[in-house]
Image (cartoon, rainbow, N blue to C red):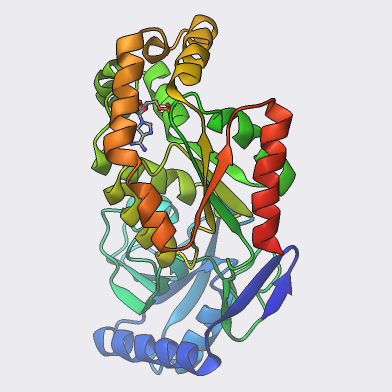
Length: 370
Ligand code: AMP
């Protein structure tokens, strides 16, 4: 295990595995470009090590150049790709092979394709040492791939975490084991959102409320918002496939979080199973599910009060509130057993002052860390 800045990383690919992949790529491309004198264009900074080893393994005449783009800051791709070093001169009529260290969402690649689309090159190919097929959503097919890897944050062999780690001969992956991931459970009005605000500060967690994400989308008139509104207005659950996809995207937006509070998700067994599978694929897991218990009469009173202030349509009508309780009883309550089977279910009395309830919750969380 190594430490870079505030994060721990564990071994993922050995020097031997990487060198093997580089050699295979050089051999494959050598067959296609034996007499072609291609120009290999490395994408800085990450690809410098790959380019160097690749060229040493490439047996035929070739030239080399570099472009530089930037999109990653820390662990998160910012989505904005800038050109810092432009396409080389005199490439008209030449075969260009881009050498990338890693392709994930494909945003950088899209920018590269665009950069070269105005040039009169003979041929344009992409070779990437690492490729995250699971998250790639670009249109361009990758021509040469060294190793297909799962969607994990990696460092080493040219790749960095906040500029550290580029000099490592091996590749390491982010170790997620120290995270705390919580599910806050409870009927509407139980105080999940209120408590999440305190817990996220105290434990430095990212709070994801699926209800809030839906409301944000409704407010902004997105396609997702329009779809969800019809269900939410009636107090029905939004279909699983929509909610699961949305939740996964929210988690993916925060790869550097120290943990998550899932509030209002999962609400069905299918969602709980999807969450387990999704987290497992990222080397993460749920540590505890904590239910805030309160009786229906108190909850109805709280929700009607909240409805007056927030204007939420689903909080202003007793029949809609009751429908939400029914949805909870029939679809969400069975999750208690799901998490009990995993020894992860905890119940907390949700009646009392906000402060008292926070203390009950922190007692459970601190017992997990002990
Ligand atoms: P909340 O703010 O958690 O009470 O959620 C408000 C509404 O958003 C719910 O009544 C549902 O219509 C929808 N919603 C929120 N989370 C989910 C979920 N996990 N599955 C399905 N629908 C959800």
